Length: 471
Ligand code: ATP
Ligand code: MG
Image (cartoon, rainbow, N blue to C red):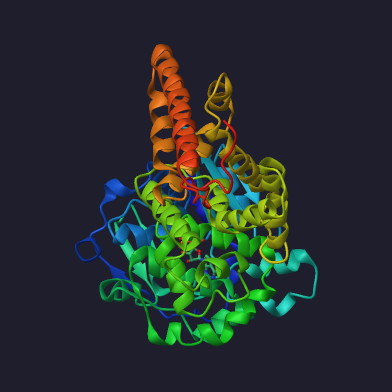
């Protein structure tokens, strides 16, 4: 007891000496009966982190998107904790704690349970830029010392009012500095401070605004929305890797289609995100490419909303498919053979992207695998189907082919055949292969008959493959 008391006295946090004015004033304390957060939605590990910090004498809260989601009655997908303990002090309290980052260090506390390990991100209250900036030009050390701030400053640095609430699991109280709870009730997404200034500080906040609006179904406050279209070109200065990550989050939000429409409405897609230009500028909504992408995104949203995983490679493979298909057809028209035409089209499609948002290497190889598998689904003879099933990315290629069937770009009967084939036992698989032989035989017969009856006419391809592949 005594040692705990002495420890508490001796613990002189840098922010204790911090004399900067508290921005955002004093917070509103919101009791349980008003915020109605269900404690069952909390991560036990996040609670363990706040408790451990509090028992050691520090302040600690669940913060950010997790509080927003909890107040919406949604189980957050990850938990962030904010504290007045410095990263070093945090690290000393946990067995599996890792310091991340250089200028603004945060701590990842990892818990190993039954499923995946859970990482709780613990960050120290941060000062406002203007307060931390006194010593920016000096050594990193001084900068680091000046980075930490009060909770009020930490709140003012955050983006939206609904993202700036602090929840203390031990008292079940929410600390609300910027009227986040009132905005939650009004279903409004409001930027803290002067929106234009905040977008200039960090243009990615414009994309975050669209993503959260799509995800929560909230309306962007008029003042928060107004500057976006004028400032959209600021996104050009964002490092491509960060832009890519943000777009990926948007596409994987479970509400990608409405987010993309949101981007268009806000005037955010133009030139900045070439991948999205194609989707949005296609003109005719009824065009094959538009329909395919729309269906793919709806399918992705559905998967994510039901807790299934979606690979980024798969997602980008679908977004670029209309382009690829066009290039592939053009190559065939030039007289190239089917497979080389596809390979060449893949190179061309990927090269066209590298000027804008670079598709990261690890996704590129997934995309290529999914695409090159497509003509192989048509080859249903001998050992080919068995070999195809064995390929490591078969499932993704198959799902992709089913999407093509759903838009009618590929023959739905082919999708059904593969669905049956996967589920079948060995003898049923042989029967399915035999049925293809008969199908092909019958098709050849009718074709020859037809040809005999009347003069050959330009045949319209019923399957979507640009050129019927030899069985
Ligand atoms: P989700 O994780 O559901 O996408 P989130 O709100 O938790 O949403 P994170 O990117 O995990 O988003 O960020 C956690 C918190 O950090 C945010 O809620 C916000 O308070 C703050 N934050 C993140 N990015 C920014 C930013 N660019 N500008 C200001 N504050 C930010
Ligand atoms: Mg988060």
